[in-house]
Length: 139
Image 1 (cartoon, rainbow, N blue to C red):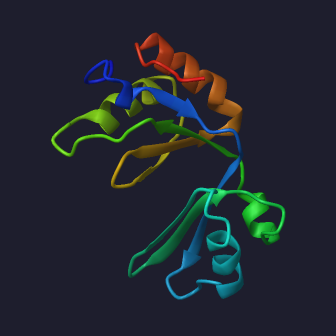
Image 2: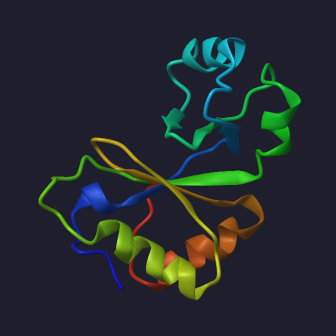
Image 3: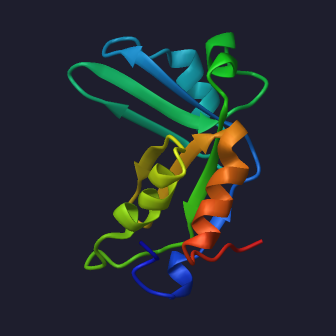
């Protein structure tokens, strides 16, 4: 399913650094890690807490504990954005060619756009599948 439009806000950017995805217990937020992640505003960082768990997603850096490094096998493809809220089907259109190429995803949405993480060993497959499906990449 190609992108819903050819608008530049729907072009894709592969972010340059490795990312981690870590699941914590719902009451396990480590203040030291939080300080490390929030002290670098230029780096991507997402924290989501539910009644069952905490998901922490971000760009890996050398100062994080080992469990973050052990879970840093991800790369991130960002939809350029910003996207209008009335635009529908973007994430569905984006992930369908990845599903067909058997590339697992972990998606994080923000107000402006979506970030889709793929295993770093499948990045080339993901990029190829998206290009074949008419998605455009910004260098």
